[in-house]
Image 1 (cartoon, rainbow, N blue to C red):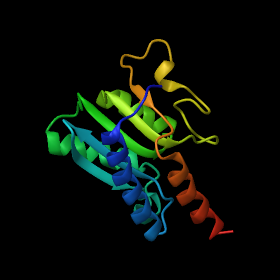
Image 2: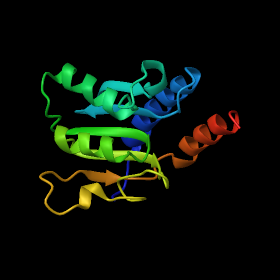
Image 3: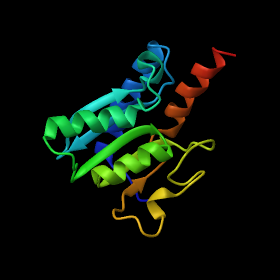
Image 4: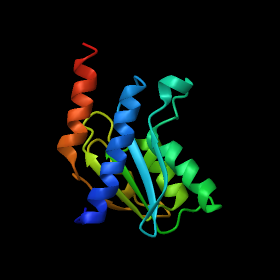
Length: 153
């Protein structure tokens, strides 16, 4: 884990906007943004319910769009911003895409695969390491999730 700067805060705010939009679609409020060279190249919110697709996590959608925008399946130099700690599927996709850095908001004690439940990026033998910064605007990210699930109970 490393520190964060003002650009990280700005891009995380954009990810939070995507999370709010996901909540508006009755999706779990998770948002993601991919930035390369200081610019957003892709952004997405969860769409698993809308699309009936269990792989339609915000991170996966944003990575797919970023690859299309860049014209390469390798997202070298990219930073993925996501409001909650990624799951194993999303962490694995970041490794496959060669994402340089992950910045996320809140830890996910029930499914996080970066440090909470698993530490996929630290697994011996993987062929790519992703630099990670956690806890960026975590309270806002957690607040969105709490509101979402409280309304459904």
